Structures are given as C-alpha cells and as structure tokens.
Image (cartoon, rainbow, N blue to C red; front, top):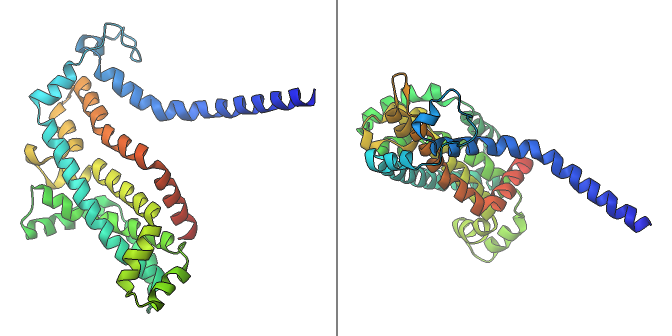
Length: 285
C-alpha cells in the first residue's frame, strides 16, 4: 500500500513539474511556430482579415523561400553574416583569453580596478558608440565593407568575454598551473597546455555568446554598410523586404526562419558547455 502511494506521489509530482513547464515552452516556441506558418502561407491568406493567423487554411507553399533564394541576395547575406561572425568572434576570443588570464592569474597594480572597468565598458550602450566608431571606420578606409563590422564588433564582445573568462579561469586550481611552472614551463606554455584544455566549457560559452551577438547585431551593420552585396542577413532581409509602408511578411518570416537555423544548430551542439561555462563565470567572477 505504501509503495502504491509512493508511486502515485511520484507521478503527481512529475505531472505537476511538466505542467509548470508548459507556459515556458509555449512562450519560447510560439515565435518560431508563428514565423514558420507565416512563411508557408500564400499572400492571399496572409492579407485575408477573416483567416486564422495561427493556422494554415489554404495549403502550405514554398514561394517565399524560392523568392529569397532566387530573387534576392539572401545567400550572399548569409555568407557575409557567417564570415563576420566567425572572424570577429575568433579575434575577440584570442584577446579575451589573454586579458582574462592576465586579470585572473597575474598580480600587478590596479588589477582589480581594471577588471571592473572592463566589465563597465560592456555596459555602455552600442548606440552611443557607433558615431565615434564610424569615424574610426572612415579613417581606416574600410567603410561600406564587411571589414568595418569585423573591426568594430570586438569593441562590445571583448569586455564581457574577458569578464566571463576571468571567472572561469579562477575556478581552475592554481596548483596545477604552478606544477607546470615548477617543471620548467613558461607562462604561455602553462596557459596553452594546462589552463586552456581545462577551460573548454568557458571558452565554448564565450564563443557562443560572441557568435550569437554578432550574428544578430543590427545597429552597426545598418550604419556601416550600405551596399546590398555587403549586408548581413539581419539587415539585408529587413532592408530589402520592407519598402516604405509595404511589408513582405511571407518573405520576412522565411528569412527569419532561415537566419535562426545556424544559431539553433550551434546551441543544440554545445548547450551543455554553454550552461556550465556561463554558470561558473557568473558564480566565481
């Protein structure tokens, strides 16, 4: 009898837990669901005031996707986004690893204040920085090119990435590194051969953060690039499919669905590393 009651209690507890998750799952997945069904609707159904906006009633079509691939430069935009995100994230990762390690392990005057200043720099809104950065871009002669974004994106990636890696490096025991130093390893060898392999979750977390932020960035991409062939997917889709007060909703939603696929794939592959790296940096930083 007691076993039956215990089993019933476990079932009720599980049901209660799943029931609590339903609202969160709904709010998380509903935008993607709405984007997907909107991208598969015909224009007649999209602009029919009597149609149900959350269902496909006249049959799914792929015309909006074909329009993106064959009548716009969507593939070029996606390629630009991929190049910019990968290069800018790689540059930021190298700088952040060196800076985070120095602030977490080395001792020099003002190290604590400098670490705090790095994080405060991240809090500066990007909308306040794009005006002075535009002058830098013009001075470098890289305006209206993808290099303008590759150069400017690390300005907001490096501060937070450095702060996050500082927290993760502090979770690694000093004794392991000190043993390598005693055995004759240099500080750089200790970093590359001892610390970095143990900091993989934190590095993956920083990489995902940087890739996501650069992929979705809009202000700099809109300000520094005007040529259609050099635009990113986020700017290209919105700029070419919103003309005045005319919104091509089917193609806009198709572009949103396709542009979100790389982010989804990356997070599915590295979700465990991302969670462990983010929580460790938050607790120890």
